[in-house]
Image (cartoon, rainbow, N blue to C red; front, side):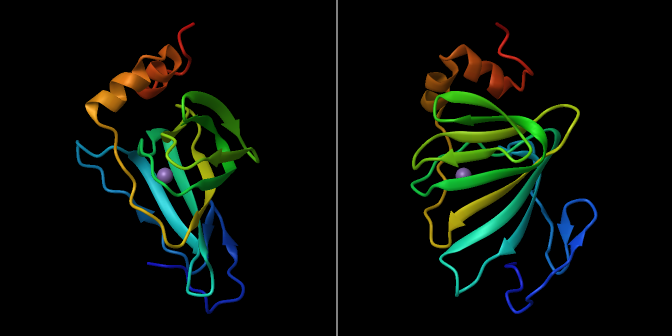
Length: 158
Ligand code: MN
């Protein structure tokens, strides 16, 4: 469901929620490539060329590893964690900015102790995400820091 663009002011609620904004739990079914992620669409509608969403990854969880032709502009709003963008793993914390370029593999992971919440700006009209093939995974895992990241290890083991 899209955000209610007819409301000028929607109050912030405790726990990184907002009035009149649905909080959607991503389904988890064994094969799901994400874990413990919720999504709230904050701004969306015909008068905008973009959408602003708030995603929150629970401790130990992660977003989908994916790539697509559209870009993401991300602002970390809550907690800390790490993200993979392209071929590099970054430590991120509140108020950091992350740019995800077109066709860059990307994934966000919360640490074991804290959630990771972030605003994500996207084009309203965008292509569907692509998931990695086994060959894509093998290429990514050839980089030790990325292999550790994808395993959910807290450090790269070095
Ligand atoms: Mn994406």
